[in-house]
Length: 506
Image 1: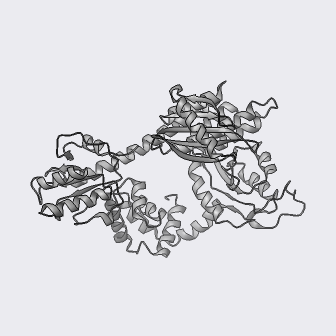
Image 2: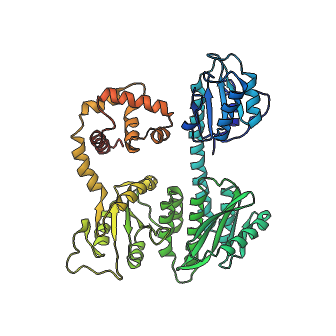
Image 3: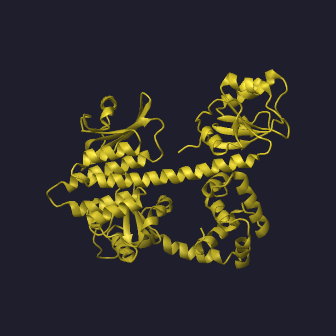
């Protein structure tokens, strides 16, 4: 959900107004930037609403035209002139220059602070993220319910088309349309099917994105025991929503696993943990819990995630009988095992000793069962415990840790954190932490943790906290002053990060 010029003007009509009585365009705004430079474009990415008091605006028409043309060429979303300090009214030449290049011109009245516009922008950004998250969770629930009906193909296509507010189609392996929703999109689905056939996407897990008129189309192959079993497509007027790709992968997983459910061989007990684990891996913890309840898969209160690289298929089948799991989206991706925290030590030991290696990279004990097939560069990491609903948040750290884990190594991240955290806690005085926590006007502990988490990068830390970058910089100035340290010193940063982690504050 994007913030637009129209939405900003509608939300704060007393602080942000159009110069002329015409509808404000619904142009997406990527940020709000204040600048008094004669040429601010080197500091802009494009898409910003630029705020200025006009201090550096030229008096003559030709230089004024050049100023506005530079902004338009840099894809600035709009220009807002703050009246009062420099200019009491909007210069007619500025209005004409903006009209010539199609740049939206707004005004901030003399009584209104620029901060009101900045604050409203970040409030809408935060609300949009909540809305997108709620939409993604609701759509995941709808997909699970559709996959458990008597017509999973048609049900999933219908739910998927509604979730992206566009259309969806299911194709057979020869790229012929089997289901489409809504029916009015049949023509577009057939055009997309012809494009898929032309692209010759033969791999079972192949994916592609391509334009179709005013639509963007996303296609993903369906895998059935290593063979291509069809394609699932979504399309809508560009751009596709942020959660569209994850919903498509979730839908593909559900359809692929339905083929195993429909088999009279009694494969449901094996497929059910894969459904639950795949939904959890895609970030849909609530939908995974719903599916687990329907399919009779136990949902532990506390879980630990095991991420294993190059796990042999025989071992995956063995552990799938006991716990939710999810193969990666490709052969190179690690396998996810969702372990009951109470049973995790036993299963982790069994997993590591069943391979060519033992925990922490030590040689496997004599007499250990050899793997059913060559294990390759097998390695794994085990996370700390977390409630089921928070399990997806453990994945990024586990993936990062596995990427830095040598072949043949088995790492328990909870043990490592306890060891390093205890060491780091000793490097930070408790009085310093209390001084930060005692500051009355802002949560400086959370601010410091976010700054460390993003490795000293102000903008991503500010975005995480819903702050403007200038507010974030001000807070970090307070942190420097209270702690009397160089917050960008690697030794200081590492000691504080470990101390905050050991206390559960980061």
